[in-house]
Length: 100
Image 1: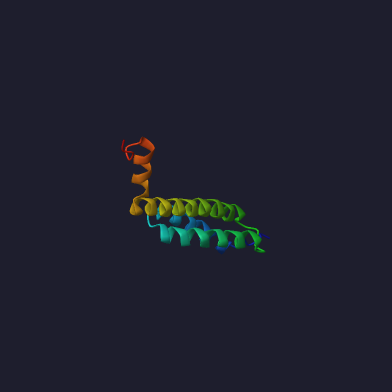
Image 2: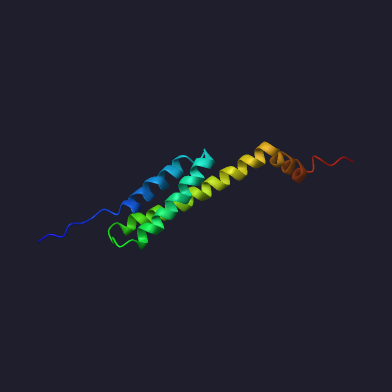
């Protein structure tokens, strides 16, 4: 008889959320939440009793971590741009801010 294969739902949801976290990286607050949730669901999908689709769980963890990193980098860049620190650092590095 043929063995019935069950779908590892947590692994599939982790993969879907991690892809969405990459696609929504310009909205850093959404991407940050999606990345965290996808990594958590990926880990739960790996530890579940259902051994099917472990590759989807691993892919969800990796892509979710990349989405999380993109969200953090977009948030840091946005903060630097909005506070004006980026422009000050550039002029200070060029020596334009120094008067003789």
